[in-house]
Image 1 (tube, chains in turn cyan, red, blue):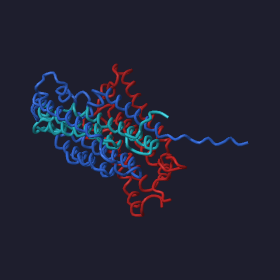
Image 2 (cartoon, chains in turn green, brown, yellow):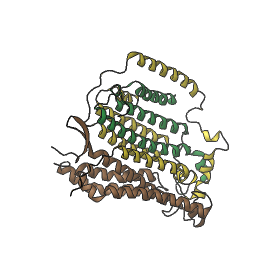
Image 3 (tube, rainbow over the protein chains, first blue to last red):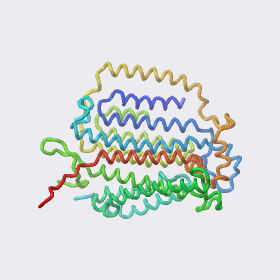
Image 4 (cartoon, one colour):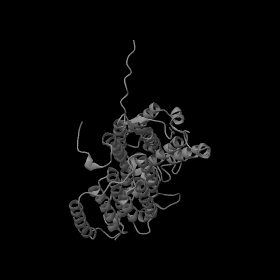
Length: 115
Length: 161
Length: 171
């Protein structure tokens, strides 16, 4: 049931990329898709009444290994969030250059690819 | 007037040290509590962003110039690769934890876990300098009208013409 | 979260749209805290603040006025029909995944997470299992991510560089 909410968030981002004419709205759609994917990856690794994967002093290791949530999706999502930041910085730099060359953010008015 | 009002400037001067110290703490204790290199590096550079917003570009660039930030970026990345190659030559595998296998420390202490704190420090320096350079470039460029066409020039932040 | 994202896409003021993205990221970070991932919650909050700063810098004092309408009606209708078809197929797929909350790593005996959780402290000496995964067991992925960040920032700086005017060499 909660996976369906992640899918709806992803489809809202996809609608923003397909339909909108403003470049900033397209970049916002890509950001929303990024958040939805990270959320879905973490929700797969959840365990009911689980504890975070950090060992404190005086813990029993076998008990801890039975109760904690899955640590592997957390390591992968950490990488994915930082990569998303780099890609958004690059897209915003391209958008600023396009504004300087064409005078507007509207993509139906940008026809020439070079020159 | 360059920068913000007097109240904002005073508070920014008091708080910037605490923010930097918090970033260093999250980086160094990355193997004991949640955190690590990425979060610590970004928090360390947030204190510089606060100074840029409150005081203007000139004062911050006198403390950390663009050339120094670019060199720190490369140095952090080279230290990370040097640790990985040392692991290959001493331990036998790329990125092997050679310190932990030869000199195991006490558990739950600050100087334990081999090469993990060193890698955290290298990644924090690298990520912090990269994001500082991006912010400085985005903060000083402004698109203005000039002789009929748009052109990008470099200006001071928040300067009233 | 859904309402914030719909507002971000439909409003005609660019600054309001960028600020509505902040709510999506903040609610996402609170959900990460309830799931049991404090490491990820810290990184998500900090990175989302930086994304807001970069986007606000791109939209302020530029073309802030409204753009009239979307693309023509035929394109919008076809896109919505295609998204509805993807949604129906997606719901069928999600009924095959194990229920939300079941312990996936106990279903498979040879799952690597079992080895990481039980042997992590002895082999690496770090109580934070997520740190020992990204810096000892899977350090190659961290090297790839550092390279991607370096290259993306280098590309952004190269695009925004100005041509310096050549001063005429005097006599």
